[in-house]
Structures are given as structure tokens and as C-alpha cells.
Length: 408
Ligand code: PMP
Image (cartoon, rainbow, N blue to C red; front, top):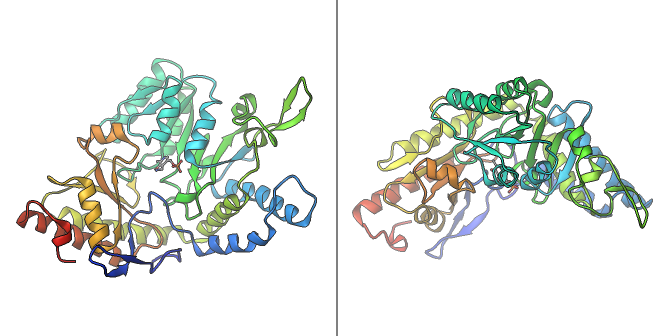
């Protein structure tokens, strides 16, 4: 592995009553905690206290940790000096928050995760159908942005289905040329690639702690303050106000304006610890490690008869460690259950909250996704490839494929 993560060496039960070491190939759903994240949570737990409320020492420690996390995260993503970092529950929360702040129409692609599709569609977003190439997809985006003014282009940084990466700096340029801002859904990109908002010209970025080697329940929206300051608060309540009388409310500015209620102090501290740990890694080496594992996975799976890998584009400039595939004639759940029950391998199956994309790729019944991260090893990849090969061979010789009867 490239880094120490929680759950390494976990023992899991198999269908035949035996056990084996778990192979986690489900990083894209939620990534295990980095060792530095676990340590930070353990250090902060004794100081468990509400932020912003008390003068007590524990409350001061938690407030400093919570507010300091904004700077850590701003640094991590190369935010401009006047950008704000708003803490949310996750990417979905961040996108719903921003959707309530955009002063105009939004343009989106049809390949998005539902989190970056439905909040905008609810506001009447204009949906551009992605083409077979990134180049043609960008031409279609430009045509849509030029046809009628839009306030925002909302796109994913990396697809949660195929791992393909969009050229966000270029998209930022075309959005700005057409008078729109750009939001990047970084849920799948940030765990694999560094993003520099200022350098890339990205106006808003959202991501989730639980996909970035931190626990569940903390997410981020970072970007330009003006829209956030002008909008209604996301949650009305304590913490979001400056002054309240029985007749009137003066709301605080962002980020507090949108953070009503007691915040997730531990989750935010953990997320900041993850960003610090990731910033301290040698990004080039980490990417080379993942790329080698990903190539091994792609080569291994593509060599199996009846296995097909999903791609949106033929010219994606980059892709992260996500490989999604189908096995001819087999339900995705059947494959995923076989990997889990017979081989102790964790993958994800289904439509990945991207139903329009799966339909477009001709897989309305779903697919199987194997995804990699900093704790992944070559042996995990080899196990999944061997298990899929075995599954396919067993299917060929036994068409009813009673998984319990197959050799482990
Ligand atoms: N966008 C993308 C690209 C994702 O992969 C996900 C999670 N699968 C989300 C948004 C939503 O993230 P969360 O569930 O943490 O809100």
C-alpha cells in the first residue's frame, strides 16, 4: 500500500464458514481513514465540546480546531484569499446549498452523479448530452452556454462510474468566456488528484470527507463569497445569525450564514487531518502507484472473455482508479456477491446514483465497480481479477451458477 489506512488486514467471513483477509476495492464509495486521521480524532475526543459557545478550555480547543480547519482546507485546494470554506455534511449537502445561491440558470452534463444532477434539475437546469469524445462534449457545452446566458456550469471532476477526468481548467476558461462561473464536483477527483482553485480558475469546489480518508458526516463547499452572502441561509437557526429580535433577523455572512446548528467538530477536524496528510504525500509517486495498479486491473479484467469495461469518452485526458465492468449475461449483483461471499472482496454493484449515465452506456441493469486508493495493493487487484475469471469459467460450465457450490 502507499499509506496506512484503517481496516487493513481485516478478517471477514465467507459463505463456506471460513474466513479470509478482506480486499477492499470499494474506495470510491467511502475510503478508510488514514492513520493520521484516526490519531487526530483520538487526540481531540477528550476535548469534546461545542464550538463558538463556551469560554471553557475544551470549547476553545474545539473552536480553534474547527476554525483552523477552514485554513487547512483552503490551502489544500489553493483557494483565493477571498474564497470561503463552508462546512456541510457531504457533497450532496454542499451542492444543494449552492443550488440555493445561484443567481441564474445552470448548465450540467447528463453523466453526473445524482448529487450533481438533481439539485440543479429541480431549479430547471439545462442538461447537455455528453458526446463520445471530451472534445465534442466541450463543444456542446460551449454551444449551450453561448445560446443563452447561464450563471453556472456544474461538472464533475472525475466520473464516479468510469473514473474518467474532465479538463477542469479548460472548462473553467470556456465557462468564463461565456460569462458563467464553474462548479467542480470533486467527490471522486480529490482523493486522487490535487486541485488548485486559483490556478485552474474554478469558482466552486465540493467534496466529501468520507471519500477522502476521513469519517462520514463532514463535507465542504469552497469558493466565491458573493453568491453565498447574497442568498438565504441554507439552514435557519442558531449560529447563522448576527442579531435576532422578535421582529427581525440580521443573518451572518458566509460561511456562518449557511452553517446553522451545532457543527460536526470531530468530522471537520478529521477532514482537515486528511487534507494535511494528503498534502504531505508525494503526489507524483502516489499517482504512479495507483496508475500501475489500475493498469493491472484494466489489463486483467479486459483479458477475460465476456467482461466489458465501461467508458464514456475515447479521449479522456486522465482517469483515476475506478474500473467499472459488466460480465456478459450476468446480473451485477450476482458477480459482486460472488466476489464478497466466496472471496472476501468488497466491490460495489448497481447504477452508482448515475442512472442516466448507465442507461446511456447501455447498462440500465447496472454494472460492477472496483475502485482503488492509497491502501490498495497489487495482491488486491490480482485477487479480484482471479475471482472474476473463476466466476466466468464457472458460469460457462454451470449455467445456473449456484455460487455456494463453487470452489473458494
Ligand atoms: N458526486 C460524486 C461524483 C460522487 O461519487 C458522490 C458519491 N458517490 C457524490 C457526488 C455524493 O457524495 P455524498 O454521498 O458524500 O454526498
